[in-house]
Length: 101
Image (cartoon, rainbow, N blue to C red; front, side, top):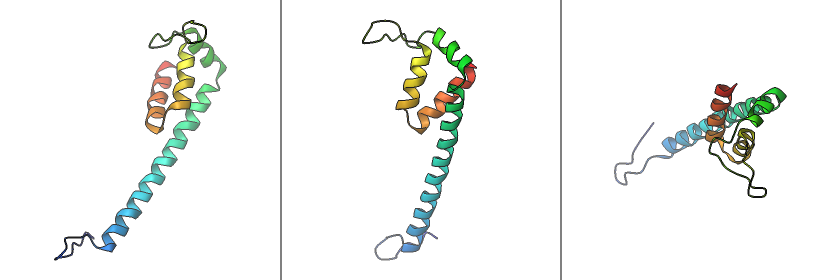
C-alpha cells in the first residue's frame, strides 16, 4: 500500500487514507479500553469497605492538606488520581488498587 511517487517522493493518497483509517481504529480501541478501566475503577471506589481501608492508610507520598495541615489519606490520593489522570494514569491507578485489595 505504501506507494511513493517516483519524482516527488510523496506517499500516495491510498497509503495516506489507509494510515488514517488505521489511526482511527487505534483511537477507537484505546477509547474503549479507557472506558472499561474507568468503569472498573468506579466499581472499586464504590465499595465502602475498600474506601474505609484506604481512608485508614496514610497518603503514599505523605502529603498534607493545604487547608488544615492534616495528613492526607490514601483515599484522597485515589480520588485525586481518578479525577486528574488520563488513560495511562487511570490504568496505573487500577493496577495499584487491585494490588491494595
